[in-house]
Amino acid sequence: MKIIFATGNAGKMKEIRMILSDLDAEILSMKEAGIEMEIDEDGLTFEENALIKARAIHSCAADAIVLADDSGLEIDYLDGLPGVYSARYMGEDTPYEVKNAAIIRKLCGVPDEERGARFVSAIAAVLPDGQTLTTQGVIEGIIAYEPAGDEGFGYDPIFYVPDFHATTAELTPEQKNAVSHRGKALRAMKKKLIRYFEEYEG
Ligand code: ITT
Image 1 (cartoon, rainbow, N blue to C red):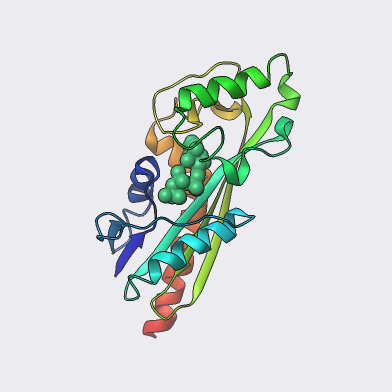
Image 2: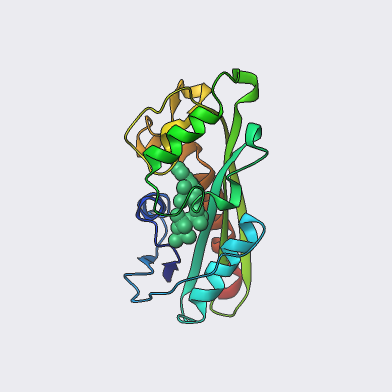
């Protein structure tokens, strides 16, 4: 079984490889599969965008299973922003130190109970027969008062998980994958894929 993951984000790809490591499958990034493509992520939801990415890559690799993740950080105090715009928020090329510092400034003086936020991940699969599957995972937290930690990527240094008394950038990759939006959504997708192939082979 060959799986191509439709992402150009190296941080995501590292997590995905760990989470899918127990699957009896060859996992290739887009780059490893020799596919280079600009994809217009113009969907209004995480699920729509994940399907857009997976379908775009499936059009170049119809014999593989194509998976895609669309994810982001929803901040209650900012009415759900950056949400589906998480990668593009304040400019795609703006360093995350700058974006994270700006978010913390926007929430200056805001108490814990109004700092609620969640990471959301939608995973889409396009199977060789064209059938699609989707799953979603969420992790709840609050926006930290200052960035902390060097693990992970993106908004991890400002996403504080009260149960761990730490940001997701302070967790080990194993700890993060065990509780994260992406870990939950990918494990649910693994179950769906296994069920699909049992039916397919049976
Ligand atoms: P691909 O579309 O190529 O997969 P991308 O980075 O553009 O890469 P998205 O459009 O799904 O991916 O945007 C997700 C953004 O949300 C990502 O760039 C981060 O800023 C943020 N994000 C998602 N999951 C995260 C996580 O686990 N930790 C930190 N930030 C995360």
